[in-house]
Image (cartoon, rainbow, N blue to C red; front, top):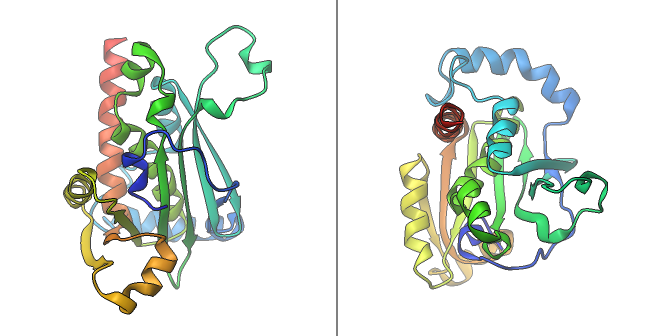
Length: 242
């Protein structure tokens, strides 16, 4: 499964055990913060500056407005971010959590400098678990939930000092593939190559990504700046309408 399978696959059950979170060990991330702040203040990749950088608090608030909470688990460089439906009934906080309340999952790893890469492996949105008109109104769209998950991993990568983010827009031979490539291109990703058309030459990529499609790269700060701006705009509009 890969990055694009999330938007396309509506009701797949989670297939992997908890894979866990991005990379910069906390001690490393803390040690780099001053350097990262300096990079951001001068514009970095041109997307997220110190003035516009979205915060974890804003991401959490945007998730809450959609009726979701974001949970992050990490093992070494690997991460798993889970978007879970918030309890709505009195006493729900004491009830064991149900997997059916998991609306989205995002996995990958962060390789801090000298590699400086955020590898977005999978992003799955379980559309069939969005129940009724109220859920649909709050959660809005598959892309909206994906932006929440993506901003969370991008912010971790930014804090770790990473510059590059990579993904595979998977091609499952359906109508979603060209839409995904178009969407990612619009937010700043650039197509690197097609995986699946080159026989044995593509075998390493297929082993890494688990599928065929369009390999795309982007700049961490640029994508974070664009997605963060989208989240902030949505949050401000929803707060103004409250």
